[in-house]
Length: 365
Image (tube, rainbow, N blue to C red; front, side, top):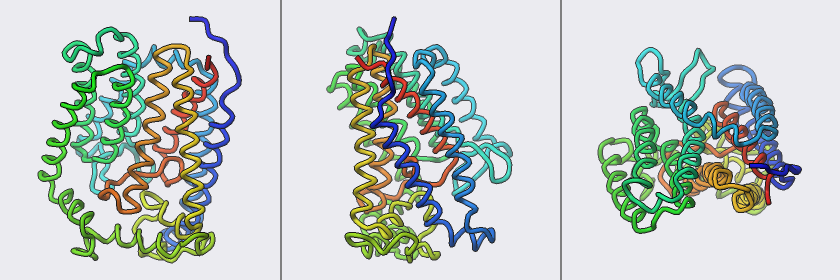
């Protein structure tokens, strides 16, 4: 299909780069004390994050200038490779255990997280599959069951690590693609009930997940155990007030809030920059979601539309869960804040995905 190319969405580029810049500043602010105590270098985490940010921005500009139809051609082998990596990471001696989950491949402190790559591979594959089967999506057996089976297989492998947070983001973004493709609400509603039942089963099957639920309902039942992170997060956000304590002036990063540079970096941001700073980063994410939806609506073909929905969904679901956890709306799940939290695999993958979204925006009708 012939498509006319224009400049990428400037709103989207500026918002992404602003979020990334804020993220680098907050990674340093949140981690300086921790990294000095652990490595004798207050810039340790910042230097690593800047390295991955440079790699990610390079990947973003590369994918921004690569026709998004190229991803359609490699969607199947890409998915198979990610499935292979998810299996490989489960093998003792090959997969690296971090934070209680066998979800990393790598040597020493450098590694990749295959489940992060599966999120993008899954939405690319589903976008192609559903674009090719537009007339069958209303059929449960022919249209809906095949993509759900593939998604369920990936989710099962991710849960064996276990990594409920990343699996939830992948499922959420995938379901948005399936819904946008035209799946019947009656089918999705029935599956949602089964999903809730399955989630209850997963929670009951693992004591630590049940502890997180009880800690979510009343963190003060175990203030030094399961409820510790939730309580310390609220202790960070509360004193921030309207304008915050000032950049670099967080108290909770002094070994009160565990790993403040990753899952709970928004707590430190709200403590130092206040309600205004917190709302500013949320507004930037809302602009990314808005422009992502616009790219989906104006894409010249169904594959581009579904792919834009999937990439936007990854960002939106991850932001919703992370901030929801930080402010006490959801149980602790171990989800990072996109482009802000420390983490090489996540940062590089998300910037690559956003480059694809920017490329789709170049072909808007």
